[in-house]
Length: 157
Length: 157
DNA sequence: GTTTTTAATGAGAATAATTATCATTACCAA
DNA sequence: TTGGTAATGATAATTATTCTCATTAAAAAC
Image 1: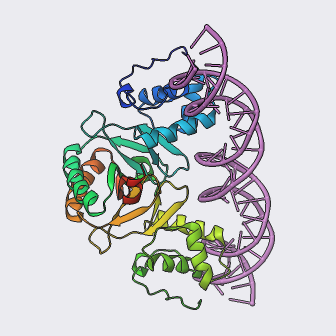
Image 2: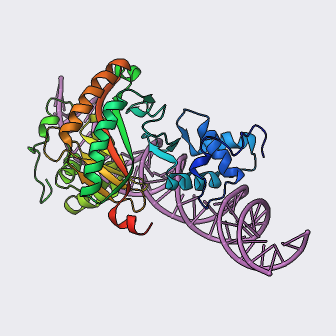
């Protein structure tokens, strides 16, 4: 177990219980990094973080593990328009820190917001029910993103 | 003017009036392709379409023009998780065919939906007002995306 | 506890969408 | 016309991501 590593019984462990997936050190390390940040980390960011506590980690493993987590529904993959994908642990809408994003189209800066969750939940619930039925689509998640100009880029337009 | 080309006075022309931007044939052709489809075209798709009526078009021009249109706020760039970006002309929420997307995480298929627009407009308006004020952010657009499994992929899970 | 089987890993090569460069061309304004 | 600028097309360069494959680690069978 790498130094500084929180160990498996983290808050997220329940999501893996009963699943026939091995919770290896590389996998635990990736989840650990994600669970300890509120930043929007890219695969390479995560690789570098994991590398600090587990230097033999390989970049391709990070990509493989992230894709695995996305398919498991534990991690969400985002595109904020700056070429690289970003990854976040999923928070349920009723949980703390459930948030969405304001994305600046110029500097690609991302602002998290947590306001209007109640209105959102109401709207989303209604839409989800209707849409999943009509299109026979199993909705697992949603993205809401506002795009525009951040305070700084507004000036220099 | 290439054969089969609708010509500049299209419905979208108003968006360019008064702007000091040249409406060249490559640019018009790209807009024309986008205005005549409801598909989610990639840059290469668009290149191939334009190529039919304007064979000397270059792929890099298509990329350049699309980026220009995105910055002008006429075109929206999407990432549906299959590596290539997709482009759509923006429809205002009060317009016909204003829609959002259901995206299958397995096969990456995209379904457009137009339901619940009234609820959406209400929710979005409220959120936009609050957020743009609080974060001093000029909101120009929004994305709503539901992710999950389409009817076919649901079976084979 | 040892062996067998299977899954996961790390290193590096390969891929492919996108971007940058640059000489050429089309357009507008004197 | 002519001069200046913006847009284009061809091509090279970039770079995030995926693929391959030999090696290693973990669980299962014995």
